[in-house]
Length: 434
Ligand SMILES: [Zn+2]
Image (cartoon, rainbow, N blue to C red; front, top):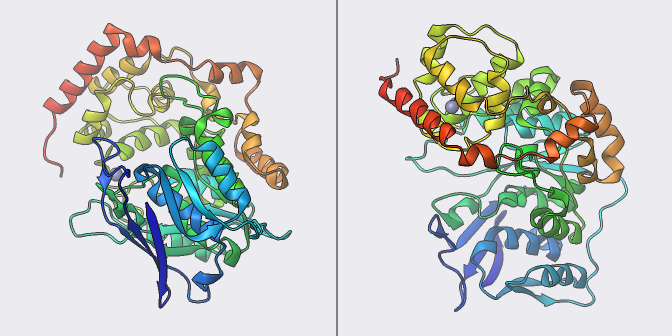
């Protein structure tokens, strides 16, 4: 693939030109969509001043799944950056290279950036990061048909700004490169932050990636994230561009980030539902279903039958609950261990997820070996901030995490039957919402 770039009145534009061996349909799930990407940069930032390695890193994030055997960049990159990529990627090489180009290095007083989404996890990340952190929201232009409602997240960003953060909203349509729309790679939401790294004086790029995504909790098996391919390749590539990852909540589960958000002063800005409006989640999506149970469990609330009737009247959730494992099953197990009700559908759910016999107390705690996923400069301060909200796992609890294994549950016939019954009972009772 060849990518050219040009800037017209504050808009940086990448144009993708495919070549013979490029992969137009990387999987049955998605294909290459739009071949033009536009990023609306702040007026004070001259696109020509952006370091070529940062441009390259962004182009790789945008095009990675679609590149066949080579990527020709608009500007030659440093030897350090190209070497790292070309050693690590077996599929394609990048170029051209300028032997004389100095790799980018941050200044001593630079600060972290954060790819901010307004959700619970990235809000928790921001809450434990230094107050100088620059959160950057990638604002995707939406079409009329989209269920995605931007109102809530824009409000979140404005609240973050009001609280004194150097919060940036950058319009960028890179998600349309994928058809159906979505991030080409999971770290692509950091493209605006990477492009502005020098302008905003950033020395690392943060993500609200939680334990479920890093260490695999809630999935089939524990994953040794720091030595896995995602961190080695993407973390390494960011580092080669002078911008290492900072993953402050990588050792914290969704239970932990929700606890942080319920207690931190910044917590009020978080909203996990992408369809509701500010302070009014839709209560009709899978995220809302899971979050309602979790928040009630954190607050040790009594849940009334009438409330559960409403909660279980959720079509999307009935689909998600019919899967084995259920997405973030660990979080549902933790919540149902702490909420009591004789409500029939709730009891079916509780039975279904109680294959996890222990109360999973370690999900409320911080896995301290994850400190290695934070640049040394920030480790002490972030550790101190996390400890304001969460206890640290002891050795035994760490073992429970590192021995996480759902294979028995996934292959169990009993669980399969419970799962079917739950989703059938739930869907048979669906009724129009009031
Ligand atoms: Zn919702």
